[in-house]
Length: 172
Image (cartoon, rainbow, N blue to C red):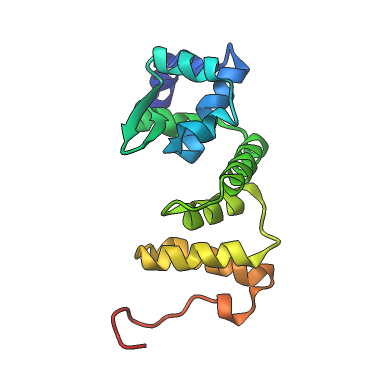
């Protein structure tokens, strides 16, 4: 029995007996940390409460906001890895719609939205992908910068979307 199987056993088959609970766990695993109010727009509050009571999710106040995360990084890894590809795409699209409907004003939203758009197959508009690439560049995340800028270029963003290979900190 591997680590993933042990984790799956610990979290009760990660909701295999309850598909609606499994989908809540997948949403959180793919999008964490998620603002509680955002998650409530995507999932039934009773399912979120049940997952928390079972020790699968943690809920924590950070300033004026409440965030939901998987209770352990391995839970998130297993839930995300065992999520079928098309269902994962659906979850990513739902996350994009929810954050955009909320105004996408939080720090890090541009990068998260771009990553979720890419994972959800929403790559027809280069603008959000390029905004995510810029946010990744500002965060010194070279891999995400290249991935998102390349996707923006492929979506018709032109050469302005191509990753630049100049050193940071130089005057231009």
